[in-house]
Image (tube, rainbow, N blue to C red; front, side, top):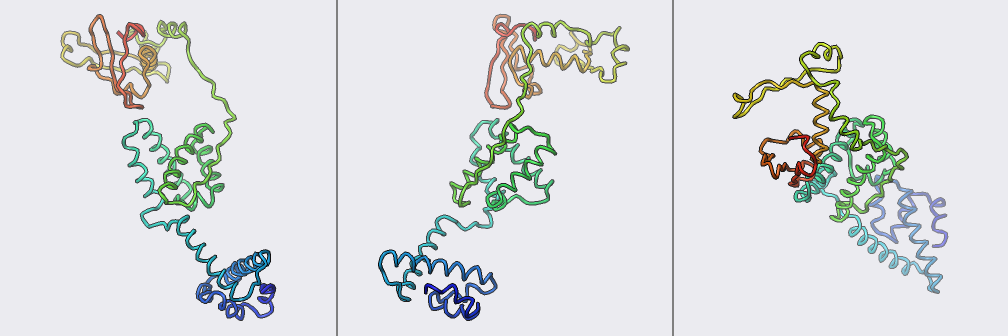
Length: 319
Protein backbone atom coordinates (compact mmCIF):
# COMPACT_ATOMS: atom_id res chain seq x y z
CA UNK A 1 0.00 0.00 0.00
CA UNK A 2 2.76 2.44 0.90
CA UNK A 3 4.33 2.09 -2.54
CA UNK A 4 1.07 2.02 -4.43
CA UNK A 5 1.89 5.22 -6.35
CA UNK A 6 5.12 3.68 -7.63
CA UNK A 7 3.15 0.72 -8.92
CA UNK A 8 1.50 2.96 -11.49
CA UNK A 9 4.82 3.24 -13.25
CA UNK A 10 5.68 -0.43 -12.66
CA UNK A 11 2.45 -1.92 -14.02
CA UNK A 12 1.25 0.86 -16.32
CA UNK A 13 -2.11 2.68 -16.26
CA UNK A 14 -4.28 -0.10 -17.67
CA UNK A 15 -3.00 -2.69 -15.20
CA UNK A 16 -3.35 -0.19 -12.37
CA UNK A 17 -7.07 0.19 -13.13
CA UNK A 18 -7.58 -3.45 -12.22
CA UNK A 19 -5.65 -3.10 -8.95
CA UNK A 20 -7.57 0.03 -7.98
CA UNK A 21 -10.87 -1.68 -8.73
CA UNK A 22 -10.25 -3.80 -5.64
CA UNK A 23 -10.53 -0.60 -3.64
CA UNK A 24 -13.20 1.16 -5.71
CA UNK A 25 -15.22 -1.28 -7.90
CA UNK A 26 -16.59 1.50 -10.15
CA UNK A 27 -13.28 3.28 -10.69
CA UNK A 28 -12.81 1.78 -14.16
CA UNK A 29 -16.21 3.03 -15.32
CA UNK A 30 -15.59 6.51 -13.92
CA UNK A 31 -12.35 7.07 -15.73
CA UNK A 32 -13.48 6.09 -19.21
CA UNK A 33 -13.03 8.99 -21.58
CA UNK A 34 -11.48 11.21 -18.90
CA UNK A 35 -8.06 12.22 -17.65
CA UNK A 36 -6.95 8.82 -16.36
CA UNK A 37 -3.79 10.01 -14.63
CA UNK A 38 -5.64 12.77 -12.78
CA UNK A 39 -8.32 10.43 -11.44
CA UNK A 40 -5.78 7.81 -10.42
CA UNK A 41 -3.77 10.44 -8.55
CA UNK A 42 -6.86 11.62 -6.67
CA UNK A 43 -7.61 8.06 -5.55
CA UNK A 44 -3.99 7.42 -4.58
CA UNK A 45 -3.86 10.66 -2.59
CA UNK A 46 -6.86 9.60 -0.53
CA UNK A 47 -5.52 6.06 -0.02
CA UNK A 48 -2.11 7.35 1.13
CA UNK A 49 -3.82 9.83 3.47
CA UNK A 50 -5.84 7.00 5.04
CA UNK A 51 -2.71 4.87 5.46
CA UNK A 52 -0.77 7.75 7.05
CA UNK A 53 -3.58 8.64 9.48
CA UNK A 54 -4.08 4.99 10.50
CA UNK A 55 -0.38 4.61 11.36
CA UNK A 56 -0.45 7.78 13.44
CA UNK A 57 -3.37 6.28 15.40
CA UNK A 58 -1.54 2.94 15.80
CA UNK A 59 -3.86 1.01 13.50
CA UNK A 60 -2.55 -1.53 11.00
CA UNK A 61 -3.60 -0.32 7.51
CA UNK A 62 -4.77 -3.67 6.12
CA UNK A 63 -6.33 -3.69 2.63
CA UNK A 64 -9.77 -4.36 4.14
CA UNK A 65 -9.42 -1.47 6.62
CA UNK A 66 -8.25 0.93 3.90
CA UNK A 67 -11.15 -0.05 1.64
CA UNK A 68 -13.76 0.55 4.39
CA UNK A 69 -12.26 3.95 5.25
CA UNK A 70 -12.08 4.87 1.58
CA UNK A 71 -15.80 4.15 1.12
CA UNK A 72 -16.68 6.23 4.19
CA UNK A 73 -14.59 9.19 2.97
CA UNK A 74 -16.10 8.96 -0.50
CA UNK A 75 -19.65 8.89 0.91
CA UNK A 76 -18.93 11.89 3.16
CA UNK A 77 -17.46 13.81 0.21
CA UNK A 78 -20.59 13.11 -1.86
CA UNK A 79 -22.86 14.42 0.92
CA UNK A 80 -20.81 17.62 1.24
CA UNK A 81 -20.85 18.10 -2.53
CA UNK A 82 -24.62 17.82 -2.68
CA UNK A 83 -25.00 20.36 0.15
CA UNK A 84 -22.36 22.86 -0.91
CA UNK A 85 -22.76 22.67 -4.68
CA UNK A 86 -26.42 22.60 -5.63
CA UNK A 87 -27.01 21.43 -9.18
CA UNK A 88 -27.67 24.38 -11.45
CA UNK A 89 -30.93 23.90 -13.30
CA UNK A 90 -31.39 25.20 -16.84
CA UNK A 91 -33.66 28.01 -15.64
CA UNK A 92 -31.07 29.11 -13.09
CA UNK A 93 -28.75 30.76 -15.56
CA UNK A 94 -27.28 34.17 -14.68
CA UNK A 95 -29.98 36.23 -16.38
CA UNK A 96 -32.84 33.97 -15.27
CA UNK A 97 -31.75 34.44 -11.66
CA UNK A 98 -31.42 38.18 -12.31
CA UNK A 99 -35.10 38.27 -13.32
CA UNK A 100 -35.99 36.53 -10.06
CA UNK A 101 -33.79 38.98 -8.13
CA UNK A 102 -35.47 41.94 -9.87
CA UNK A 103 -38.92 40.76 -8.79
CA UNK A 104 -37.84 40.86 -5.13
CA UNK A 105 -37.11 44.60 -5.51
CA UNK A 106 -40.56 45.66 -6.70
CA UNK A 107 -41.42 47.30 -3.36
CA UNK A 108 -38.16 49.23 -3.04
CA UNK A 109 -37.71 52.88 -3.99
CA UNK A 110 -37.68 53.98 -7.61
CA UNK A 111 -34.11 55.27 -7.24
CA UNK A 112 -32.82 51.93 -5.94
CA UNK A 113 -34.56 49.99 -8.71
CA UNK A 114 -33.10 52.41 -11.23
CA UNK A 115 -29.52 51.73 -10.04
CA UNK A 116 -30.10 47.96 -10.34
CA UNK A 117 -31.51 48.38 -13.83
CA UNK A 118 -28.55 50.58 -14.79
CA UNK A 119 -26.17 47.83 -13.64
CA UNK A 120 -28.08 45.32 -15.79
CA UNK A 121 -27.84 47.61 -18.84
CA UNK A 122 -24.08 48.00 -18.38
CA UNK A 123 -23.64 44.22 -18.16
CA UNK A 124 -25.79 43.68 -21.26
CA UNK A 125 -23.77 46.28 -23.18
CA UNK A 126 -20.57 44.58 -22.00
CA UNK A 127 -21.85 41.28 -23.40
CA UNK A 128 -22.38 42.86 -26.81
CA UNK A 129 -18.98 44.55 -26.72
CA UNK A 130 -17.03 41.49 -25.57
CA UNK A 131 -19.17 39.08 -27.62
CA UNK A 132 -19.49 36.66 -24.73
CA UNK A 133 -22.40 35.69 -22.48
CA UNK A 134 -22.09 36.47 -18.78
CA UNK A 135 -22.44 33.32 -16.68
CA UNK A 136 -21.97 32.43 -13.02
CA UNK A 137 -18.92 30.35 -13.95
CA UNK A 138 -17.34 33.30 -15.74
CA UNK A 139 -17.73 35.54 -12.67
CA UNK A 140 -16.99 32.97 -9.94
CA UNK A 141 -14.27 30.83 -11.50
CA UNK A 142 -12.57 33.64 -13.41
CA UNK A 143 -13.26 36.60 -11.14
CA UNK A 144 -9.97 38.38 -11.89
CA UNK A 145 -10.42 37.95 -15.66
CA UNK A 146 -14.06 39.06 -15.48
CA UNK A 147 -13.26 42.21 -13.52
CA UNK A 148 -10.27 43.01 -15.70
CA UNK A 149 -12.32 42.83 -18.90
CA UNK A 150 -15.30 44.66 -17.42
CA UNK A 151 -13.05 47.38 -15.98
CA UNK A 152 -11.39 47.86 -19.35
CA UNK A 153 -14.82 48.27 -20.96
CA UNK A 154 -16.18 50.67 -18.33
CA UNK A 155 -13.01 52.80 -18.27
CA UNK A 156 -12.03 52.92 -21.92
CA UNK A 157 -15.36 52.50 -23.72
CA UNK A 158 -17.73 54.22 -21.27
CA UNK A 159 -15.20 56.60 -19.67
CA UNK A 160 -16.53 55.94 -16.14
CA UNK A 161 -14.64 56.87 -12.98
CA UNK A 162 -13.49 54.36 -10.35
CA UNK A 163 -16.15 55.57 -7.93
CA UNK A 164 -18.88 54.87 -10.51
CA UNK A 165 -17.40 51.45 -11.32
CA UNK A 166 -17.39 50.59 -7.60
CA UNK A 167 -21.10 51.46 -7.37
CA UNK A 168 -21.81 49.01 -10.18
CA UNK A 169 -19.82 46.32 -8.38
CA UNK A 170 -21.74 47.06 -5.19
CA UNK A 171 -25.02 46.39 -7.04
CA UNK A 172 -23.60 43.25 -8.67
CA UNK A 173 -22.34 42.06 -5.27
CA UNK A 174 -25.89 42.39 -3.90
CA UNK A 175 -27.17 40.17 -6.71
CA UNK A 176 -24.45 37.56 -6.10
CA UNK A 177 -25.30 37.56 -2.36
CA UNK A 178 -28.92 36.85 -3.29
CA UNK A 179 -27.81 34.02 -5.63
CA UNK A 180 -25.67 32.50 -2.87
CA UNK A 181 -28.45 32.70 -0.27
CA UNK A 182 -30.87 31.04 -2.69
CA UNK A 183 -28.41 28.20 -3.26
CA UNK A 184 -27.79 28.95 -6.93
CA UNK A 185 -24.03 29.33 -6.46
CA UNK A 186 -21.62 27.60 -4.06
CA UNK A 187 -19.85 30.75 -2.97
CA UNK A 188 -20.05 34.48 -3.45
CA UNK A 189 -16.90 35.81 -5.13
CA UNK A 190 -15.20 38.83 -3.60
CA UNK A 191 -15.18 41.63 -6.15
CA UNK A 192 -12.18 43.92 -5.91
CA UNK A 193 -12.98 47.54 -5.13
CA UNK A 194 -11.01 49.88 -7.35
CA UNK A 195 -9.01 52.65 -5.60
CA UNK A 196 -10.62 56.03 -6.07
CA UNK A 197 -7.47 57.93 -6.95
CA UNK A 198 -9.19 60.84 -8.56
CA UNK A 199 -11.07 63.26 -6.35
CA UNK A 200 -13.97 64.95 -8.05
CA UNK A 201 -13.95 68.65 -7.36
CA UNK A 202 -17.31 69.79 -6.04
CA UNK A 203 -18.41 72.68 -8.25
CA UNK A 204 -21.06 74.92 -6.73
CA UNK A 205 -22.18 78.55 -6.69
CA UNK A 206 -22.59 80.57 -3.52
CA UNK A 207 -25.57 82.85 -2.85
CA UNK A 208 -23.85 85.93 -4.24
CA UNK A 209 -22.98 84.09 -7.47
CA UNK A 210 -26.55 82.78 -7.81
CA UNK A 211 -27.92 86.33 -7.59
CA UNK A 212 -25.32 87.52 -10.09
CA UNK A 213 -26.39 84.78 -12.50
CA UNK A 214 -30.03 85.78 -12.03
CA UNK A 215 -29.27 89.36 -13.00
CA UNK A 216 -27.02 88.43 -15.93
CA UNK A 217 -28.70 89.22 -19.27
CA UNK A 218 -25.94 88.95 -21.86
CA UNK A 219 -27.45 85.98 -23.69
CA UNK A 220 -31.12 86.65 -22.92
CA UNK A 221 -33.38 87.15 -25.92
CA UNK A 222 -34.35 90.66 -27.00
CA UNK A 223 -35.78 91.49 -30.44
CA UNK A 224 -33.07 94.07 -31.10
CA UNK A 225 -30.33 91.56 -30.13
CA UNK A 226 -31.66 88.64 -32.21
CA UNK A 227 -29.29 89.10 -35.16
CA UNK A 228 -26.28 89.52 -32.88
CA UNK A 229 -27.24 86.47 -30.80
CA UNK A 230 -27.62 84.24 -33.86
CA UNK A 231 -24.10 85.08 -34.97
CA UNK A 232 -23.01 82.69 -32.22
CA UNK A 233 -23.37 79.20 -33.76
CA UNK A 234 -24.10 77.71 -30.33
CA UNK A 235 -27.17 79.86 -29.71
CA UNK A 236 -30.62 79.26 -31.10
CA UNK A 237 -33.96 80.92 -30.47
CA UNK A 238 -36.72 78.87 -28.83
CA UNK A 239 -40.32 79.94 -29.39
CA UNK A 240 -43.07 78.77 -27.04
CA UNK A 241 -46.66 79.94 -27.61
CA UNK A 242 -48.75 80.48 -24.47
CA UNK A 243 -51.41 77.78 -24.29
CA UNK A 244 -54.27 77.02 -21.94
CA UNK A 245 -57.55 78.60 -20.90
CA UNK A 246 -56.07 82.12 -20.63
CA UNK A 247 -54.19 82.01 -23.92
CA UNK A 248 -56.53 84.51 -25.57
CA UNK A 249 -56.31 87.00 -22.70
CA UNK A 250 -52.58 86.68 -22.05
CA UNK A 251 -51.63 85.12 -25.36
CA UNK A 252 -48.41 85.55 -27.21
CA UNK A 253 -45.22 83.75 -28.01
CA UNK A 254 -42.41 83.49 -25.49
CA UNK A 255 -38.95 83.71 -27.08
CA UNK A 256 -35.81 82.71 -25.23
CA UNK A 257 -32.34 81.54 -26.21
CA UNK A 258 -31.29 78.00 -25.37
CA UNK A 259 -28.65 79.39 -22.96
CA UNK A 260 -31.24 81.59 -21.30
CA UNK A 261 -33.51 78.58 -20.85
CA UNK A 262 -30.71 76.56 -19.22
CA UNK A 263 -29.96 79.47 -16.90
CA UNK A 264 -33.55 79.74 -15.70
CA UNK A 265 -33.94 75.99 -15.27
CA UNK A 266 -30.82 76.03 -13.07
CA UNK A 267 -32.15 78.98 -11.05
CA UNK A 268 -35.52 77.28 -10.68
CA UNK A 269 -33.79 74.18 -9.29
CA UNK A 270 -31.90 76.33 -6.77
CA UNK A 271 -35.08 78.04 -5.64
CA UNK A 272 -37.10 74.93 -4.85
CA UNK A 273 -34.36 72.30 -4.38
CA UNK A 274 -35.34 69.83 -7.12
CA UNK A 275 -33.23 67.54 -9.29
CA UNK A 276 -32.76 68.05 -13.02
CA UNK A 277 -34.62 64.78 -13.62
CA UNK A 278 -37.78 66.29 -12.06
CA UNK A 279 -37.94 69.26 -14.46
CA UNK A 280 -39.66 67.55 -17.44
CA UNK A 281 -42.40 66.25 -15.16
CA UNK A 282 -43.63 69.53 -13.66
CA UNK A 283 -47.19 70.61 -14.47
CA UNK A 284 -49.18 73.73 -13.72
CA UNK A 285 -51.26 71.61 -11.32
CA UNK A 286 -48.13 71.23 -9.15
CA UNK A 287 -48.32 74.94 -8.29
CA UNK A 288 -50.48 76.60 -5.67
CA UNK A 289 -50.94 80.27 -6.55
CA UNK A 290 -52.36 81.28 -3.18
CA UNK A 291 -50.57 84.53 -2.20
CA UNK A 292 -50.02 83.40 1.37
CA UNK A 293 -48.76 79.86 0.89
CA UNK A 294 -47.37 79.82 -2.68
CA UNK A 295 -46.58 76.11 -2.49
CA UNK A 296 -45.09 73.90 -5.16
CA UNK A 297 -45.60 70.13 -4.76
CA UNK A 298 -44.19 67.37 -6.93
CA UNK A 299 -43.11 63.73 -6.89
CA UNK A 300 -39.35 63.19 -7.00
CA UNK A 301 -38.44 60.93 -9.91
CA UNK A 302 -35.44 59.36 -8.16
CA UNK A 303 -37.08 58.50 -4.82
CA UNK A 304 -40.76 58.43 -5.86
CA UNK A 305 -41.52 60.62 -2.82
CA UNK A 306 -43.91 63.55 -2.68
CA UNK A 307 -42.28 66.82 -1.56
CA UNK A 308 -43.45 70.40 -1.09
CA UNK A 309 -41.52 73.64 -1.38
CA UNK A 310 -42.56 77.14 -0.37
CA UNK A 311 -41.51 80.28 -2.24
CA UNK A 312 -41.44 82.09 1.11
CA UNK A 313 -38.61 79.81 2.19
CA UNK A 314 -36.64 79.59 -1.04
CA UNK A 315 -37.26 83.00 -2.58
CA UNK A 316 -39.56 84.29 -5.31
CA UNK A 317 -37.46 83.80 -8.41
CA UNK A 318 -39.97 81.38 -9.92
CA UNK A 319 -43.10 83.45 -9.21
